[in-house]
Image 1 (cartoon, one colour):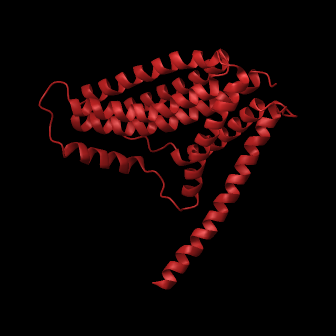
Image 2 (cartoon, rainbow, N blue to C red):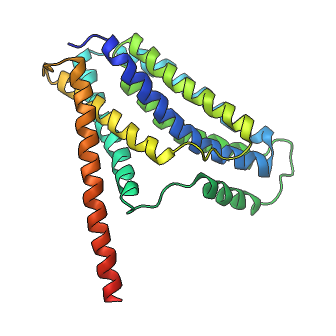
Image 3 (cartoon, one colour):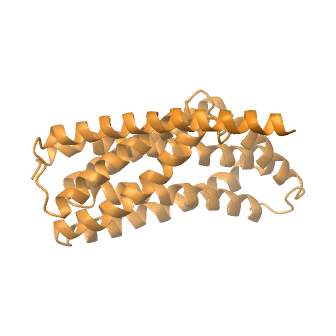
Length: 256
């Protein structure tokens, strides 16, 4: 079985990048709430959600470590693989031009318009602001918590590494938000989702294999080869999707 240190780096990197993506999306809504409805409600809702998520990691993480390692690897590995494939599928379709790229500036404008439509707050603590910030932080944060626990649940060392990657990303997003006071658009979010999808799928495949009793021949190098394999396969699919999409658009224009 691979040494735990061979999993620390991919665990930290995947947790950091995934948390960075989710944090940027949550920050966009929290900023919109703060600008339109006030910062007390925006930060209050986000802070409350963060406490709930931190409690979930503190309770669920060590509990999973008590389950036999093969069962954890097989069960969480399978769930993590499905999760990673969902991320990678969207990233592939966006890279191929089938789906539009996610635009944080547009999301900020849309959320701000929706909040303004509800009128101004008439109380010190704005219920709409708190609820909106809490909801987006919980939604995006739940995916982060799942990744942290799924990638680090096998041992306390991996759980610490996964949590460290996630907390570092959250701290970076918060600092960027405080510095910019606007959506973080300089981070190539769609590229990050593509990379995270590859990392998670490779890591999950490795875990499923170990959970089924498969002895990876190259140990740590097998994880690297899995990443390369998923990356090559994903880029091939992007090319195929581009070709199919171009033919479909051309045929549609010809029919019109």
